[in-house]
Image (cartoon, rainbow, N blue to C red; front, side, top):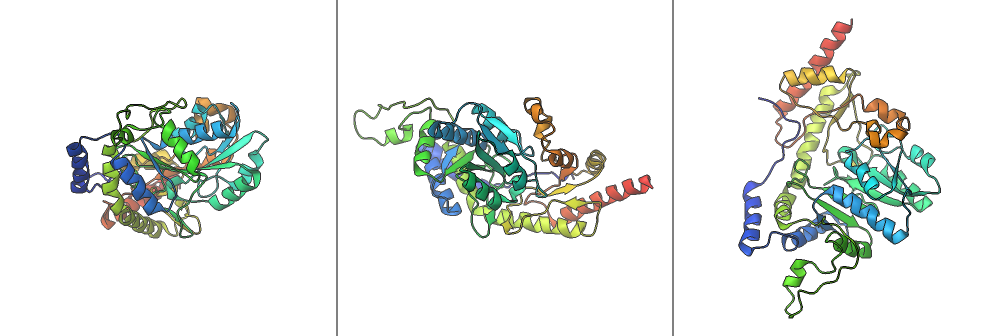
Length: 380
């Protein structure tokens, strides 16, 4: 039987119970469960503000759009970012009519603070840090650089649901989570934007509902004859989340820590299985990081042959991620990040999800080692 890279684990009965409440109430849109999930997420994460959205991609664009408006950034102002991420991270910068400036990565496949500092110019306005696979990398140094240079820190926490750094939830000036279908807290697709600033949280709520100053759920609770009235204070977007997705999130949240714990157990089994094998390098977890372990990544020569060998043995893998500088919209900086360019040719994600048994993990380890040994024997 094939071993899948990702398999979401749902508490089906709890999900159906939460969704049933939406259907019985006749409320499936914004409000109701979205409010409940926002409050639950704040309680879980310790973050002061949380607004439920239809995706993390929407959240990243919304964050940059708000900072650009409030801080008076000009079109073409610069945002330092990573080339090793899902392309939506960097598309969000373009959607805000800002310029992505790519800094190289470190051993954690996260932004290298030294290269970030080298890339700062008078037009730099923000840094986007991606916690790849749940890893915090050198986030603390990046935060110090942002403070010193008066730059906004956008934390792309799409993989970081449950990650802690020195015992606390990592945060930026704004932190954006993903609850997409195969994330650690899966729905079908959703996200959460968490501003440190209360005023920006309020603005996000208006902008995510087309600039309207009062959402439909709030108006439905208004007893006056004029509850239909609202103002459109700015041009916004249709980015808000809905109660069906939030209902699934509410059902899944109580399981997040246990699922993350199982992911860490699986990662430890992989670490043990690959220990002492110089030809199979692993991406290390940063010191002080209690990782959500969304990914387990190795670095390997002849990756395509290994992928084919594992696939023949019924083991599915993934690549997280292709160097974004290979894509045409970013090709003007194709040589900007040589380490990222090199590592992206060798990185491979192995199966990691709570439904894997210890035997499944052993099967993956044995297959990887067998394929690598076979390649080395042929080379001799």
